[in-house]
Length: 420
Image 1: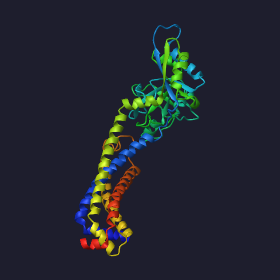
Image 2: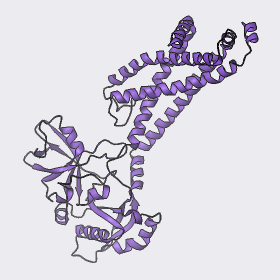
Image 3: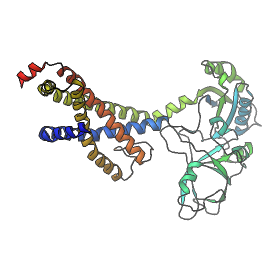
Image 4: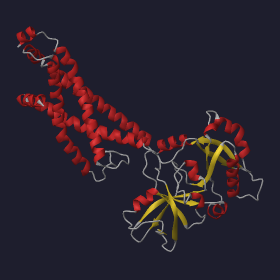
């Protein structure tokens, strides 16, 4: 406590010179808070659980062309036969067929569903077979799994993201709540269960999807000659580094059905990376990381330089204190305490400004000023950014004081008195 009181007296005695230091620390804290908040949101968004698992998952790349040798087979028959062959492979754990329904894919379709005349939302349509959730390890309700969803147009399963968004606006929302077609209120849809929660991709929000289970008959009636998407989960023991080459060489020719040919088995991690590149997320992450690194280096050098120069200027004062009986440890603690106290005095008003800027944003947490990824604004997020900023700046202050102070404390008392 005595160090704090003494440091406060020292700061007040040198208020003119310390005023510039406080102003610099105030501005630097604002920048450091932005960097910590922005990079923290980026790191949290990138590493937080996705809600699905794409490891050991592959998608089939197929080619349909040439003359059909079996005219009795429809396009739907060919793809479902291919699915059955894929499921029979000993290396495959499970497989699924879908139409425009793969995650992290540019192929999708949306439709508007309404709860009543005033409440509704657009949802991505997922037309999938029974094992889709098993392939991507999406959590299902054990009592109402996707495999038991009736294969008709009017039974649906919602993701948890849809439920979470609608519950605040629909009192008593439950599985008994009916949905209506947003364009034709005469079409009523019955909920069968809930899927999820999971995110659409690493930089995405919670999925707001609606599932319909399909079979061969449903696909014949609704998809006709459209190409289907085939995905499968490989058993971990079979997912060796040479699997893709071995698959194309040995397995793919056995899967061909009539004029539908298997061209490749692509790891889903590759599809994920391509989607993020095409969506612009990789460029955004790289740009923000470079800007943050540039600002961090400049702040680091500037703040260390300020305290380094300030401590060197006080070489005579340090020697005089030692000649008057102060120990090196006491002088060292005094200088460190003064630097950290200056930082804290500047950080407290800067925190109020940071908070005011944050809550003034009309869409806080989703703008370039605060962050560009879906991390909800909260007191924990704000305090985490402030604590991170203070700790980084404290490290810079300590480095800026440590080395010149230790050199200055080697001065002989006689030399210090002579200089004074």
